[in-house]
Image (cartoon, rainbow, N blue to C red; front, top):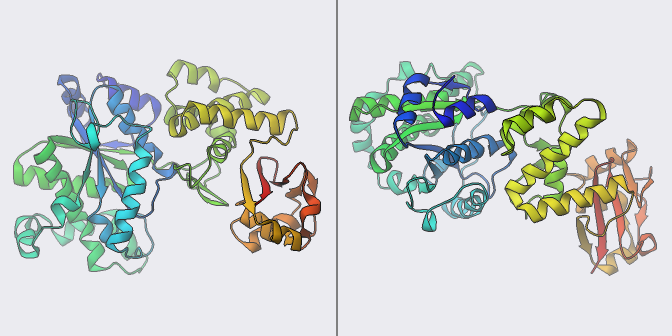
Length: 419
């Protein structure tokens, strides 16, 4: 078991999948404070639950006095990381990337303590960097001479991010082929600018991380390390953070704190202990106590998971409100006024809105077809009454205390109010 506080707890909580030299990294962390980074490309205007393992590993790093560095991919997003992708990403404009970056920055604020303006502050204050600062000015020929000579095609073709795409006979553009080189350049640049000695990332990033280590060692003679976290799937095999309604975003304007709480509350029994370790700050002895709960008591552990995870992302007040709303809605059977709500024009409700369409507008189904299937499958209720006619028009006659309560299954609810 590692001796450094960070690695010891990271192993206990399940954050460590691979490390290039665990003993040497452990010794470096025991010897003093280090800086470590994870890169996040700007492909959407919010991060989602699938990014939480990386964010929580940076949070744990800061807890133990080390310096977390968040690298925003303002430059690499222009290319797109082929790791784990079956096809090329759609290229974004500079304006889209800038807007996405602004939204993503907000996702880190609840989890990390940053220096003033995201810049260098105290020794363990988090730093936010943008790789466009050094990638944008690069000249093509100088880059090839400085960096390209340290990469062989033979070696690059052995890494999963490239080999898997070729094995499936799926296109890999020359643009994407350069992603590994630029991510390697990032590692070297952060080592030079901020004395970063560790890059962390998901297990699908192993090849890119190793390539960056080798470049830094060959050109600068520096010893740096790589550590990967496991890619998290649920017990059912589903990708972490994906639901029938889409991604579970971290920003409250994309997914409400109540829906965020419900996502964690709906965790599979088999995942509860693992998720308590990874996605909360609860002490490990408390996690072990909750893991021992069986039968119906496991639901209490799930509520703790939901409340603690929501507290980290949205604050204590929002987490408490979400938990209380769920208690009123499910345990006391009340249609609580604090349920998430949407507004529709009064005139539209006078004319009548098809049931399936209102479920889509309320965010309880991703498409008209999905809403129809929900109704046909018996999973839809209006004002707590099961419905079977997806085309039935809901109107002002369905208002109860000024709202229509829509339910998808037992755990997703919305109130429809009129403007």
